[in-house]
Image (tube, rainbow, N blue to C red):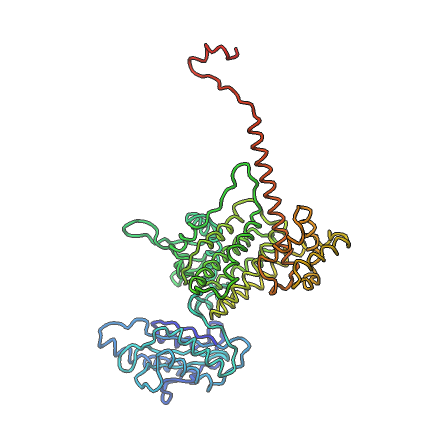
Length: 579
């Protein structure tokens, strides 16, 4: 059950909508199911057609009487005096009766402070039903005694009451929010998106685009120029004294109001971590590096996987950290940085996986506690690693290193979802689970061809049996699951490759297992496969780098010293100079 509190200033206008046919003739039998005083109340819904508009005027005047009295007493207009709260059941829920909806409405106005039970001086309100699955509660927010209601945090209070109602009426239990996720679009924004033929509201679309761009660019200027290149209109807020940009707003292409003007959303309104100050902090802490001349260009996908494993994963290993606040700060910061890694991976991954990765990144936007300010030096390292995927070589097009990164990313999302669940962040936990579905699909799309190729190159049965014995010796607790894993032949190939690079299989397995536990892994052989391949590739890179450095040093020592060629006036009389 979803309540959606908003305010306005036109009582008659909202009544016309509630008792009208709807924007697409979707309203059926509009009628009042509950009100502050039912007897004698004008009911335009079930009246003769020729009386409809007259009854709408009467009802509007009746609801507005306390508002007009306050305005006459104070000599000023009461701002935003129309309180509106649609309440909708979840898809798949049974349809409630009028009596049940009436009770829901009474509980909502009580919980929000609009009309507390037993308070005959509360605000005037009605609840209108014009569809099977929802009602609209409308009130004029001036009490009978002329005061404004005490309805602070009314949206949060309505949500809390709906969670209780769901349980009592046997409805679907929705996730409670803790008001740290990015704000959900309003019903008006959703209706506008439907009218204009868009699948997303303007706010949702802008937030998705801005988050993706922020994850990909290097500085503030590039951020705004990229948004402009996407057709997004940017409006800056300039400081009156400094002349510097102190804020900005974005407008979706073609999104205009009734006057034909672009509809702008401030960066912080899209998401708190998109405010100008938070954006500058993020960009300052992440700069991709350029390899020194003569060094080997590293595989940035493997480098990102290593950073993700070494920095982000440690925070999820110990859920009983003695300093809970410090632990939570690290997790929140790294979750935000991990979200940026998903966005950059979606841009640089093999083409056939990008759609699922974009969906995973978009879903994960709501899995971060964006209103919680949390920065950590290790989160900066993860953000820098994410940037490297875009601005250096190593595109991950071969699939192997990209699959390794996505394998680790799957574990990270599982860990983040569990962390949110234990902390009671229900909306973020649900968003992480949604992201996980897309991420697993992207991983499978990337990994299948690599695993199939390794399986085709499985060592001889004799070698495979010998490697299986090494698995049983090195990982006795998980050996049976590893050897029964469909990916065991591919792991045997990786073990043989590690052995040929000079790493004993038993030692390689021991080091791979120590990176993190295997108990929660659905396919332990597959998890070990990517760890082994990364470790083997790292050793080869180090040897290549050392060999190149040694060659450069030897060449420099062996090079003959060339005498300096004199210049200037004395050069002509130098007897050692060739003529």
